[in-house]
Amino acid sequence: MGLDELAHAIYRFALDRPGCHLNDLPLGVDAPEVAVRQRVNRLVELSLLRQLSGTLVPTRPPLALRTMLERQQSELLRRQQEFVHIKAAVDRLSEEYEDAQARGAHAGWERLESQAAIHARMERLAGRTTTECVSLLPAGANSAEAMHARRPIDQHMLDRGILVWNVYLDSVYNDRAGLAYARWIAHSGGKVGTAPTLPLWLVVYDRTTALLPADPADPGAGAVQVSGAGYITGLIALFERLCESMTPLDAPGACDGDQPTPLEKELLRLMGQGLTDEAVCKKLGLGLRTARRSIADIMERLGARSRFEAGAKAVERGWLRPCACGGDQPVRAKDPKAAAALSASVAEGLDVGVLV
Image (tube, rainbow, N blue to C red; front, side):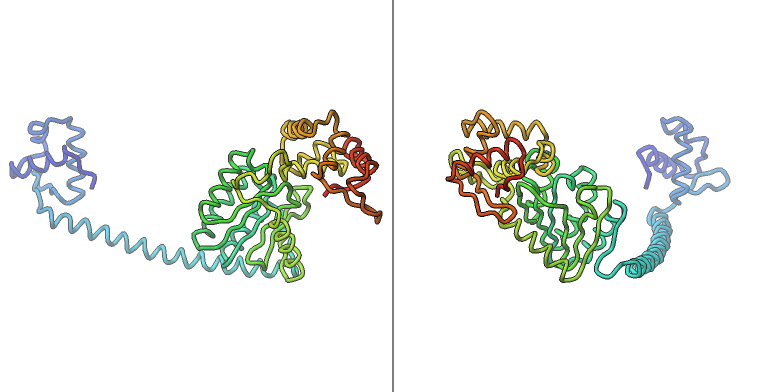
């Protein structure tokens, strides 16, 4: 009510001295005159005091408080009515928005040009989701800005009991903010795993509608919304294929002895495709220094003095399986010439085979 001890003292003074004047208060209350007048004004505003011909008349508190509560009740009713009108206006705007979106969509797909449009569409699709939302989230999809925008959407789905299933790169363990977000999803009832590489950013809602980049090589190119069995079946098959080889988040290490991790195998595979260190880092979501440190560690465990030799020894140990390209017969790992050719692809970047 905005009453402090000084206001109480003034009210008690007026009760003890009926017919006292405003000028009497500074003598009976130890407080500056300005403060006293402020409290008197508040008491008058609350109808706890009345001024009659210069005197202060206390009123009965229950009656005064009832008057104040009646005023507040009228204000609440006015605000409630205002809220009803605002909600009706928002509902009309939402209907107009949905109608406009439906008119602008192409058959089976729709281009979303800006990040704002993508975020708005994610909110809309998540709000309609009833069963599950599955996502592939490579490094570019885990910026601080993207996670900040996605969190209320994910929270809303988790609160409604929808399965939120995210697959991140193994390199998420090197990203403190990204790892914290992934663990929050897992601890909130979602399902989270990691994979050495991910082909693109992808979100599928209820296995009916998906969002994916318009150009995976250009994050600024926007996104595409697709629907229809022809599109979604292939995207879900891709997601499920990746999930077969994913590792649950924070799972204990599954490699025995000196065997390479899935990330290290993928590192060797990408090197064998002739990719530069920079291109390998981009696919794995690793920093250049981290990737080169991993390569050095692999070479040390293999006892190799060069990447050329590391490629050959990786095949000899069975860490990698060479396969044919361009219709040639499969190359056997036990063949010394095959091992030499494979190691040459690792060291020189020659397109002689793909490591799988």
